[in-house]
Image (cartoon, rainbow over all chains, first blue to last red; front, side, top):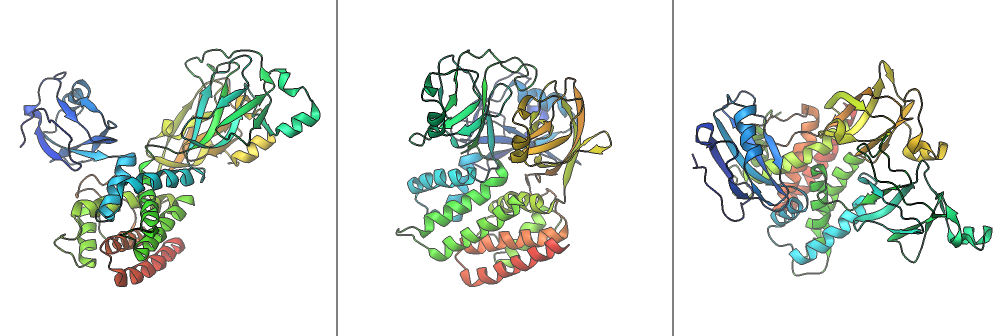
Length: 281
Length: 193
């Protein structure tokens, strides 16, 4: 049984130690652990009839394994004598770890990082991962930037209306002075030269109010926008980690390199397609 | 079929002629089974979770994880004994451009917005409850003692899938081809079941 002492440095994935309830310090005693990037801590009961693990997603920070965890161990499951802990990875770190494992260390880390970004962009367009982002509207400001991880704009919701998509040309034909119009936005105008921003029309004449506690309900911020986007997500849900890792491997091993392996790439692509087809049903 | 992660790993290692796990660690084999199995349940919908979601005043848009973090996709929404019809999100916006703040005496339908959000249309002035049925994200196989949740007929293609991946990782492509074909056949069996 390991002694419950501070763990210094990066904790390897799969690191496991057995703790005894009797050895735990009092709740509130800080124990420093360093969790891998995008990682977490899994705590399983040992010798229990129901060994369902409990997981803490800590997302890759140095954390103080103090109050919350120890309170949990002491108070929530006082009858369980032993616990195993294991660090695990989520999101990008999990994908990169899978790519490294499945490629037997051959994949080029720099290339893989770029490929992963492209794969996540493509995945976003499948429409599974949607973000709903509130935007504060400033009176007199018509153009707003999309979030950095937004891949595609799905819809913009005004106060109570889904703004109708339109083109500058259409507005120009209807009203030569359209840019000067002020009022409550009713249309969404995309600029083809800048797909990282969108314009609302007419230009808002009122600055939005602050959101209340139930921002999507009765605390809705009057005058604000809610922007629906398809996102490059990090961390992505874990059920997408394996297909993403396989798509990365397919692209990494089909490109010209000293480790090019078309047979491996095409198998990875075929297996990724199987999973994506299953998920899409 | 295996009932635990350990039994599944033993089977996979035997099939790939690596009983001592020298080419593929038991940890990696377990991780691959664990990460692959959610897709099989999302497709075949064997395991569900159901529960009650408390709706908020004047709110239409809800995160799926507000209902359950283990929900992969909402399949059915019920108010009392009435099952609400599902409409595509695109149709909702076409039918009512003011859908986002529309209120009514009761919810009439629901729409999925990707896999992580859903819409109860219209919203209500009062707090209420709806019953939600969702496809479950299979639990992570946190240890070798963890149980495989999928029924036998789905485990066949799941294990074929992981076996193919373990073989491809070792570049045993002559063995990959028949396992890929077996995977296809077992997927067809699973669909027919």
